[in-house]
Length: 508
Image (cartoon, rainbow, N blue to C red; front, side, top):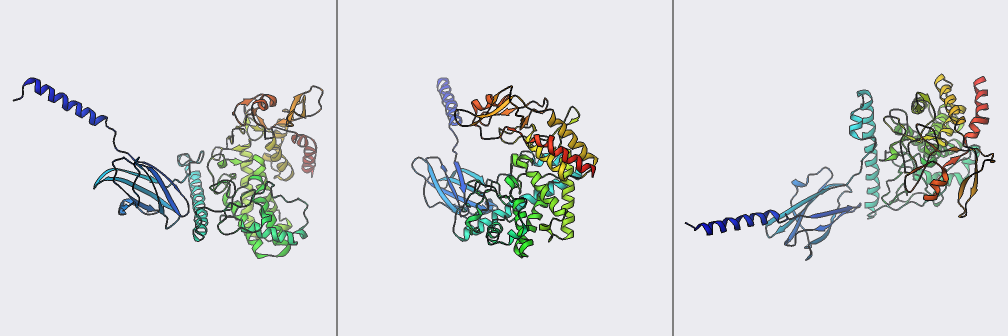
């Protein structure tokens, strides 16, 4: 039997040993991965006592746990760092597992999964699941199709690049100018050599889903294999199919002109694919997102900004009203386009913002499910828009259906603009050569704010850098870079000649 003092010392040492074991950090692996069309690139750190590393890998549709462990050719460095590549047999993968060994003993294991970003802001699965059943099903079908389109585009581009042993696609040549046709372009011009050359390039840059990106320079010729359809970001999937900056709508009009003037089958097919794209991209409630397949963030919003939805409605109306350039559209397709137009107009009416029960105007973008005014970038808060609302009113006044609902919407919108003029300002240049607006009681200039508070209707000027909402343009400009039109005089025409024109249309 141990003496009491020895027993006490033994228990103390045992307890201390147990505490030390608890305090000792567990072995861990830090694992980071990036991937391209050809390989997964892994790097990280393992415990320093590691003598060997193994991995197992799963392509899309496979299970890593069912694969054998494979030895890594290189050993970790003295500091535990490692780096290795896994060659891809297909462009898609799902999981990579890495384990550290000390002899035959497994010290620690780590897994990582392919990072596919579909983190939507408003179109989250749970938000759609909360909708009434009839709406829910339509939105679920829409989002499933959008995701499938996105994956299909990725697979096609990756196949091109893998065939050429390219880890990443080439970026298309950029163009700062928008593709825009003059409304009075004669049909004969579309039979010219210049139009033919541009048509070849436009057709080559049509996305697999049927739309077009923006800011692509078509003067450089057709798209080469291994080149992306969009040049808007390094990974290439930003604005890959969009209505922003007149994209897609203008390409459809261009190809329709060529098809009508020359009877070219490829131009006709490209235009019809573009029209089908418009129909597929339309939300179940009649709005259109900025990008399709749907891109997360403010791109999910129903976009009036820069008149994107107006441009779509203009093309849709040109088809339904049998404009000469769209004579090749058959009756079956035209009827589907008419249904899309009707849904689009209904959505426009439903989005018109009410304040204290009274119709006002629209926001530059609206949430896709609730139709509530939505934010975009920091300089584009939820608000009542003076600019985009003007263009929407002009479209309705000139071309909208003459229903009581449309008449009410127009009257309310014009009345709101009429009571939200900004006077006493003079447009000038500051000492840096930038546009400025200074107080001048004697000025005859009249402006409207692009952004107005949703409750008070008062002008707001959001800072593009600090996100603060300022009450005046000079306050905002003093603390932020200004590269945006925060004031506009376009509503002047609505209250003037457009209203006169509208009354004549009504009289007829």
